[in-house]
Amino acid sequence: MPKRPERVTAKEFRQRFPLPGWNIMLGQVEGAFRAGSFVAATAFAQQVAELAEEHQHHPDIQIRYPDRVRISLTTHDVGGLTALDATLAAAVSELAGEVGATMEPDVGLIVEVAIDALDFDAVRPFWLALLGYRPGPASESGQIDSIHDPTGRGPDIWFQQMDEARPQRNRIHIDATIPHQLAEQRVSAAIDAGGTLLSDEYAKAFWVLADPEGNEACICTWQDRSH
Image 1: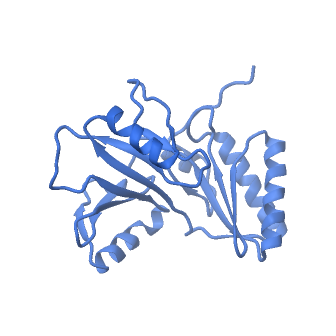
Image 2: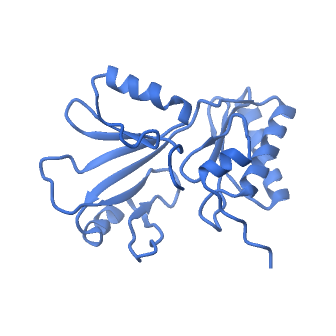
């Protein structure tokens, strides 16, 4: 039986595997490419798929008009990053150089929706039914605290435990995980657009902001996290 790959933290991954242009995003590493045309983007995606078969390690591949290809890598068996992801990412970068696809290192976004809840089991069924989502995996405690779109198109939703009801405060906020080098610029832009910085206590893991009506959102990166 093949040896189970060793999961590494985002910090360890960054230190051990220098991958210029790739961004660490919520337990995965992403590369964004411009191929020059839609046909070239489709061909590049096919070549990446063939590489993945050779490595027996398979990414998510998205093609977007006019010529963009996004490659997302994670090791599903361990629920995070491993050396397998680094090896395939390096191979994809080499392939891109051969076919003339260029990287866009400052492109990357994963949106999650967080819902504050007192009783996860009470609120989860509503969101599953409303969105056609599926339950996420149970935590070590047995609690299911997230749901996801089985087609991979919609944002994940996770439930944040409340100790008591807070009816005066909005109960839904948006988490936007972006490339770390853009975070402070994005925070400043949000403030300039009328937002308020509520907390930078946990930066650079995340900054908490609010729009002019108090609806909250977090700018998140891989940095300053324990996992």
